[in-house]
Image (cartoon, rainbow, N blue to C red; front, side, top):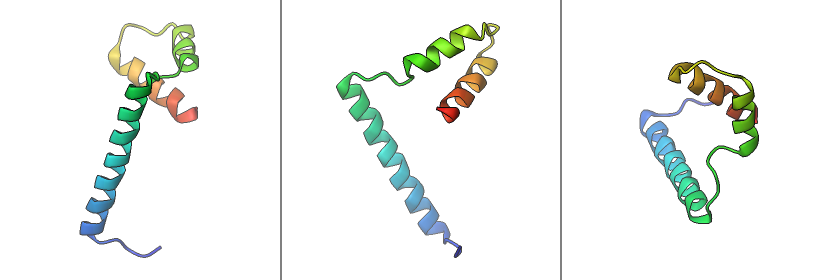
Length: 66
């Protein structure tokens, strides 16, 4: 794979961020949930301690596997 210049990497990251922003705005407009109900039910079933770090780590892992 050819090397990418710093300017191109920055441009690509800006384009990806714009796509993410557009997707988020579209989801808000349509009233879609950011986290699917299935994932929320799985999190509730884990009976996690009241620790934000543990919650976000588990949420991240579940979203990646989805």
